[in-house]
Amino acid sequence: MSNETFDFNAFIQESKETLLNPKSYFSTMKTSGGMTEPLIKAVIYGAIAGAILFLWSLLKLSPMTGGLLGGGLGIMILISYIIGAIIGLFIGAVILLIISSICKGSTDFESNVRVVAALMVIMPINALLAFTGHFSLYFGLIFSLAVSVYSIWMLYNALIESLKAKPETTKIVMYILIALIVIISLVGLSAQRKANQFMKEFNSSEFKEMMEKK
Image (cartoon, rainbow, N blue to C red):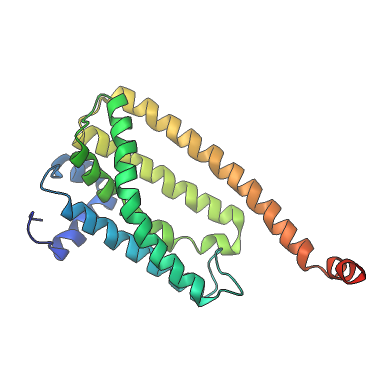
């Protein structure tokens, strides 16, 4: 990709390479050339992820499908993912810069922005597998954790190859991140189970009768 034009064919090839062979991709990835390219990447990945979740909401296969809001919620998902991708690009770059600094890697902001933009390729994959949570919370958790761990693997390669971080320190930080992801996922699962139980009780006939008596 050049600094003046956005080559969509190159974008597709780079996305495939990032997902399938992160070590090779990040070892040759350009870490300079302006902010336009990573910004466009973030918007595209966010739009694709939002469109996929919008489709799941229309098919009522998304955990976020809302009865009263219906398709309107789907549109909001699409818009929020695009906006979220743009905001997340720069917030993520700051976070990655801190991690890279800890791992003795590059603290150049543009380099970190470009790495985060490349890592956002995981967004459509995560959205594509989001429907699994509709059928089973545990099923969804397994897929979510698998995607998260693979994302950490991609991040590890990005830090080592693109940002020139120290492998030993980076491994320790990655293990810590994986542990945090597992803990947060388990806490989220517990909260979701309680929310589902509450909704079942809320919709139960006994609860309705109790409210009618009041």
